[in-house]
Each structure stands twice: as structure tokens, then as C-alpha cells.
Image 1 (tube, rainbow, N blue to C red):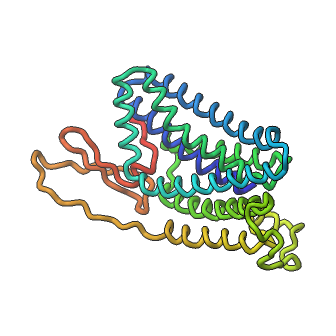
Image 2: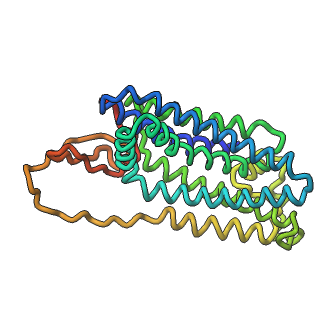
Image 3: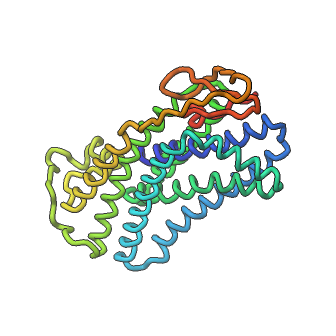
Length: 319
């Protein structure tokens, strides 16, 4: 259940931060009249995400009669979920510096078009997180069929994310979001490795891959599946006491290189220093979630701001 809670927390907080950026921009721009369109777009995205998750489950449980077809379907969705998790983690790491400015720019353009454009922009900003959550949750919860625990854990993670987002928006809570996304990203990579291992097992059961009975090792005597810690490892990262050779290769072959790439320090290119064309820029101290307690935002004469990693990763505060 921890894996699905983590999925709900991570994806939910990303979506909550996106919505907070949009809401804060409208409030600061004195365009509160467009807030209902934003909430309408968010509600539609949530509804379609739930529908997508239901369709996946319905397809697997009702439309596919043969067990081999169900195993193949679950294997394909597992691989797709791993692709989405990997892309999401590295995209967030790369786009954290610019996401706030990009969202504000797109919302400005949408405001010039009309209410439908505002709702559509909010919908597109949230639907990606929703579809990813539905797909990843289905793949992560396959091993707990017939148990409502993973669903409750997912809802709990989303509820926690919403609460954190509200507190961040209200300036009642400060979190180092850079470290938060780094730690949750690393844990999600291990969860994705378990999902990939599960997908390989489904491919083997469907007859697509060989070696279903070729075990890499068997430590059942040391890691009794009936114990709580064995159930925890299996539920979180799909670490089992008797995996097949291909399952082990898939888990290690994904987790090790992806973790190394993700935890590798990002290269920072120093910004070119140019002489100011107009009056000297004013440096205004702001607080945010970065590796230091304080960052700065440069405010030019035109009122454009240059966001830092902390600004992109944290929710804009209300004026």
C-alpha cells in the first residue's frame, strides 16, 4: 500500500502545485472571475482520469476472457506505466526551473482568447497527471487483486498532497520541494522497477517470454512470504524471495542505471553576465523550497521576473 500512497502523494502534489500556480496568477492579476473556468477544467480532468482507470480495470476483468490475454494486457500496461514514471520523473527534474513561467504565459494567452480556453488550459495541465496516476496505480496494485487497501492508500496520498498544496499556497507551511521530489523520485524508480518485474512475470505467464520456472535464487527460508517485512518489500518494490532470472535482470537492469542517472548532479551552466541597458535591477528576497533557505528574484523595470529552481518548484504565494 505504501507504493500506491507514494504514487498518489507524488502525482497529487504535482497536480496541486500546477493548479496553485494558475489560481495564484489569476488572483494576483485581478481575474478572479476566471477561477470557475479553472476549477471546471480541473474537475473534468479528474473525472476523465477516474473513467480511464475504470476502463483499464474493466478491460482486464470483464472484456478479456482468456487468462493469457489478461496476463498479456497487464504486462503491456506495466511496461507503459514504467515508461510514464520514468518520463515524468526526469521531465519534472528538467522542467522545474521553467514550469511556473510557462504556465503563466499559457494562461495569459488563454485569458485573451476566452473562458473556454482558460478551462481547456487548466484541463490539459491536470489531465496528464491524472492519466499517469490511473495507469501507474493499476500496474502497482495488480498484486493486491480484490483488496481495497491500495485504492484507499492512493486516495490517502492524493488527500495528503491536496492538504500540503493548500498549506503551501496559504504560506502556512514551507517544504523543501527540491529534496521532496528528489526523494520521492528515487523511491518511485524502485517502485517502477518492481512494476517492470511484474510485467516481465506476466509476459512469462502469457508465454511471450521464456523462463517462467528458471529461478535466479530462492531465499524463501530467509524471507518468509508470510512475514510482514516480506509483504512490505513485495508491496513496495515487488521484491520477492524466488524471482525468475528474467525478472531479476529486469529489476536490476532498470533500477541501477536509472537511479544513477537520476541522482547524478545536474550540470549548471552559468548565465551570461550582460550589462543592464536600463536602470539597475532591484533584487527582492523571496523564500522558497530550495537547497538554501533564501533565494532571490530579479525584478526588472518591465516587471518580468526570472524564476529560480525554488520558484518553479514551489507554489506562488498570494499577494
